[in-house]
Image (cartoon, rainbow over all chains, first blue to last red):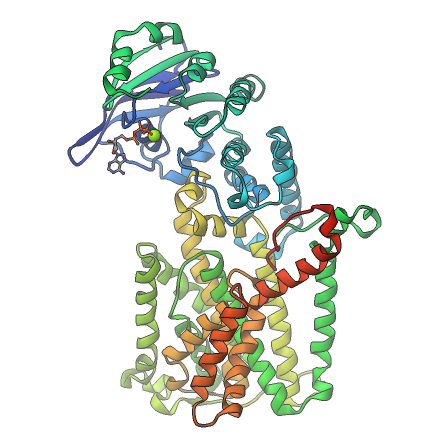
Amino acid sequence: MDGSAAPLLAVENVSLSFGGIVALDKVSFGVEEGQIVGLIGPNGAGKTTLFNCLTRLYRVDEGDIHFQGKSILKLPPHRIAPLGIARTFQNLALFDKMPVLENVMIGMHSRTRSDFLSNALRLPWVGREERAMMDRATELISYLGLEPEMHRRVTDLPFGTMKRVELARALAGSPKLLLLDEPASGLNHKEVEDLIGLIREIRDQRKVTVLLVEHHMSLVMQVSDAVVALNFGRMIASGTPKEMQEDENVIKAYLGDGSA
Amino acid sequence: MVTSTVTPKTIKSPAARTAWLNGRYPRVAAMAVVLVVAASLPLVMSDYRLFQFTLAYIYAIALLGLNLLIGYNGQFSLGHGAFFAIGAYTTAIMIDRWDIGYGWTIIAAGAICLVVGFLFGIPALRIEGMYLALATLALALATPQFLKYHLFEGWTGGVQGIVIDKPEAPFGLPLNPDQWLYFFTLAILLLAFVLGWNLVRGRTGRALVAIRDHRIAAQSMGINTALYKSLIFGVSALYTGVAGALSAIVIQFVAPDSFTLFLSIFFVVGIVVGGLGSITGAIYGGFFIQFVPNIADAISQAAPWAIYGIFLIVFMLVMPLGIAGFLAILWHRLIMGRLASDGNEGHPTET
Ligand SMILES: Nc1ncnc2c1ncn2[C@@H]1O[C@H](COP(=O)(O)OP(=O)(O)OP(=O)(O)O)[C@@H](O)[C@H]1O
Ligand SMILES: [Mg+2]
């Protein structure tokens, strides 16, 4: 991580405990712009907790988090998306009663500006903004193959489709950094294959840096430029996918835990 | 909630027709018909009936506000009768004391309720669900007592309340006062309706619903949930305050016992029966509040509330999504019935 420019994201000595449980213990790593970084570790390792710290849903006990060289720890949660950090959720966090299209449009909230008054009066520029949002949302929806479901409520959709809606919603905010929390969980083999291509494409074509939490090892190893491994809140290894596969600590963590 | 951009000329396929029927034009047409009917009622109705319709419209304005808060944003209030009272007293006091034109007093009532509602919305951020219901319940319970309180008596008229004069039609319009107030209220309802309709159909409305459906995800999308929640509390109070102001003018009288907890409860009944999270639902709800007690009374003078209760239960059983939801499904069936063979599936759009 000692390149010339500062990394896009720098996690520095972040610690967080819940009562007696140490969820994160002095975790430090960086994510360079344009990289796909995998974040792995057994259940309860602290991966989701780290995402929650990055999006300010949790307050860190110690350490700092820099995005584009600036600390984000003073910002409230709703100021994270405007910086260009978007996420998906491990247990889906969609707006259930709304159709797919509107879910995706909400993803653009931080990139648009009409407010109570201008909306109520429906000023001409508000109409233009709405149409621009609609166009962009439609583009993303067809990019992710969700066209047939565009006007359906998300609760009526299969699990894998809901995951794609979440991805579309996250991309709608034109993020610089995309945090994906177990995007492959619950997907079938074919869907996982598609996802691998999709994550690469998102990075290559849309110029989005990706931090990826995943238990699906072959996926992580295929797409990641670098991998960070956590266990019991502590960073136990980091390196290229190849290095990780041979790393003793990583192997021990997974075997010892019995899960993989 | 999506308005179609398909114009009548381009409709070819049945699917496109469905989209069109679910879109903007049929709604605008339906609204125009309703407006024409509403505007011709003074020709055929007695002044008393007109007065009752005026009150139904006033309740509809209050319900629009309450529905923005409960239906769209998911914040519960059992205390909106208090904002109705603040609006009514603001108008009554301004007319009674300072002889200010009633139009201005309505604006003042709205502004005061906006501020009070916004301020109430700030502590309300810390409480949710049942607890918020209880906090607002306290507001409703305290209101009549505040209005009777002897230190304010010089302003509020204590238990006696305040009597005000009924305004005449302006500009030499050939209307009696009841007819004039009917049109005046209808115009304000129309304005309130259009503004509310626009609000929920834009970025703001989506943010409000997002907060209701998943607050954490809403935050992660960049929605300032605290700001939106207190602002919608204010806007909701504004609507209800304007309705209260109109009620003072139309009834020509305000007194503490018109603003008991019952009023707040009726408002909640109105939005649920009309349709939660539906703008048109507020209008059905307004009619329910105004007329169902009368109907119940006409059926049984001995136990009107029992009849009212039966009405409520039947409504909720037959129309669990409220009148608006029921009509939306009906409308949808009508279209889908004809297009059943297309295998086209959808959900009733919110109306
Ligand atoms: N809000 C919370 N309150 C208490 N404990 C928590 C909270 N959030 C996380 N934890 C604890 O922190 C530890 C790390 O949890 P986390 O969800 O980050 O694990 P994870 O690496 O995402 O696991 P998985 O792969 O199962 O998703 C766990 O022991 C968990 O119980
Ligand atoms: Mg997790």
